[in-house]
Length: 353
Image 1 (cartoon, rainbow, N blue to C red):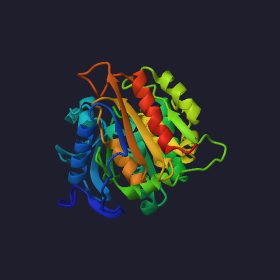
Image 2: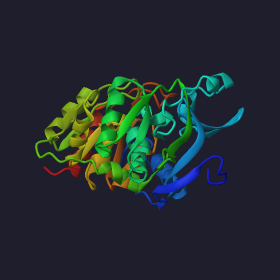
Image 3: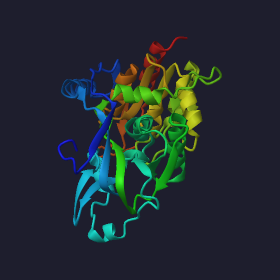
Image 4: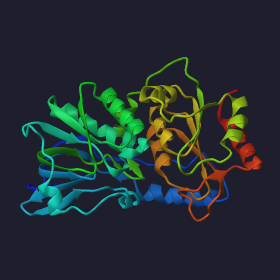
């Protein structure tokens, strides 16, 4: 983008370059604990420096299926697709002249538009970490800008809409159809403040974390359930019952308004949760608290380990037995009675009586 004036003009740096190191988990319970420690040590050595997130003005921009193209006559070049490789299978990559010929255009070309979105925006955690911070560009652009976000389904659309207004109360928001093609004489875009899953701009994280809202009546110890389509803890109820004597309150966050989710986590002193999007709310949790993740053996995605580092949380993980050994990213998992006992013993060590 910087090499070609025809592709885009840099306007401002929204979040600067950054560098940080991550501590090892304070505990790993599972059959491959040493393996995970070595893996994370390698990640920490290799991924420390992150690029700045910059605001660009892009002329002759086409937006289709969460990809930005720059059009020059009959040719077009994809300018931004996604830096999350595993999501490319969910995209339509066939951009055709017919799409461009029938592209929707703003009724008032003089209006200004800022696009905030990626393929990962459908995931609540990635919206919070990767996308929502980009709305800080409105502080530079000022009034008269419409923020464009893709429409997915009611629950996530409402959470994204509400969180945008929480961070930018005066924002004008338009929800667009990701299956439609749009043409803009000029479109504003902020380059990613994160590099999935290894790096997150601490300043971008702090920007979203500023929405933390304290409530003295909220529960202080949370057990975060997961009701997704995959990576479920099959005997979740048994774990909830085992943690209850330590004061942990089970919470299910599907269809819970954004304001209530951030309040819950803003007041937490300890969090245990099944690895998944709801744990993105740890971005609102106070620094220094312990956060313990539950996952299936071999699901070693470093996204939340890295988030914990930027928030200065103590990070630990407890692994369970996979139902489908060959699919650790999707498989349900189970904790044996002995593994539940190990988890409870760990939690008891890090929370005050």
